[in-house]
Image (tube, rainbow, N blue to C red; front, side, top):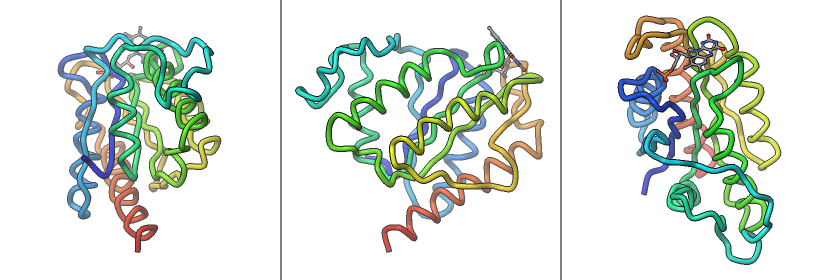
Amino acid sequence: MADVILLNGSPRENSNTLQVLNVCKEAIEANGLTAEIISLKDENIRSCIACGECGQIGACAIDDGLNEIIEKIRKADGFIPAAPVYFGTARGDIMSALQRIGFVSMQTDKFLSWMVGGPIAIARRGGQSLTLQEMTMFFPINNMIIAGSNYWNMVFAHAEGTAMEDEEGIATIKLFGENVAKLIQKIKD
Ligand SMILES: Cc1cc2nc3c(=O)[nH]c(=O)nc-3n(C[C@H](O)[C@H](O)[C@H](O)COP(=O)(O)O)c2cc1C
């Protein structure tokens, strides 16, 4: 069981999003908490079908692997979804995952309440701001706490495995990870 779950929304093997999440994970671990990165790369996440069954069964009715991820998030204190930008918005499957995770939380024990986190967006050139706004919508409606940094959580990168070249972006993510860990510990004190 990890203190913080980081969700990787990239389908690529040597993904920039994964590189950025590794930086975030290391910052969380350097500040005393455990963290696990879960990738959607090999999943086939469907969109919410609005069946409302989660309220009765305590989990999502769609059996595509997301419930296993939900159980890990349920036990954690922090949650950080990260997505590559596709056509100016978040890659589709991470939004499908967020909408289903949020609905299960709302309809059951509200496990997202008071979890600490925030979104991360990675793109070649444009669309990070809107993607961050799109993903940020998930946090306040689920009574979550968004950690800050000294810039928005965006990294510029295109070719696989080049995210570390954006030094300012990487520094922003390090501080964000550190803040997530510190906030969680303050809340638990
Ligand atoms: C279908 C598609 C759409 C994309 N749209 C955008 C875009 O709107 N803006 C942008 O700057 N980059 C765009 N990109 C580039 C990716 O965001 C960029 O390569 C990113 O680093 C991919 O992250 P990953 O390696 O974690 O998958 C797009 C890439 C794909 C495949």
